[in-house]
Length: 299
View 1 (cartoon, rainbow, N blue to C red):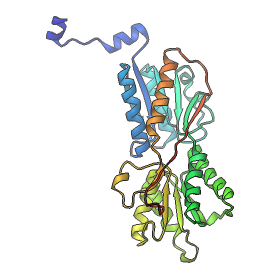
View 2 (cartoon, one colour):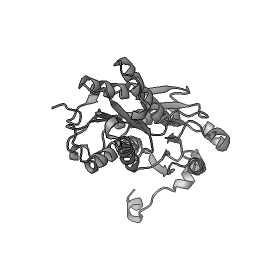
View 3 (cartoon, rainbow, N blue to C red):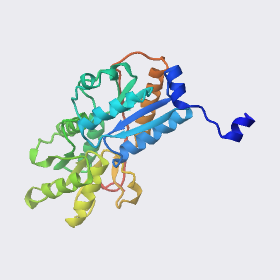
């Protein structure tokens, strides 16, 4: 060991992987890292596997299906031991396009996806959206808008469903003019708010934003429209943005759940890789309560 230290020797990773068919590396495939959700989930996953002497290779797909296929193939070619994957939509035909994927330990997060029969770790989207909308109703709001992401993804579709079910429980009639489907980013939230508020006579009194990026875009739009929060408009968001403590007023969101999703996915993948668990089609939904701020009228 003295000679090892003197010469700075380290084992040959490629040679070891050829010998034992293990690389002690996992792949993390996500649409982007700008969305704070994926960043925080990734940090949790990497920290967990670091403790177990695994490295993490991260691949960004830029919300393009062809990039997903390329990333999955590249990781499998590197003989990684397992993959945590956040797909961008319902369908993808992944097993036909990446046949070797079926033999790799795999955990999917954020979206259910046809074409992948495996283990999932997801938000309880319907429950979380319902909590937030009912909270606005309890503040006396009856014209509640919903701004969500693409409904081709389960996260967008289920959060819209949670909004609609909450309206039904509160006895509020559905109003399509109060719903906007847009991209999961700040520009999407900004443009959706500007569009929904262009007719003064039909403006909502409250808005449910289906993710943190949409919420940030909404804050930008309300500033441009010179509408105060919560005086002129009440606001809630599904997940807390990473700059939540810098926003005035501090928004009401669900409690932070990124760490729970990341840790649950990492533990499940490790069990699959070491052979502790072999079942597939296991769906774990993470449920959290409210983290109230001042954006909805709470003190």
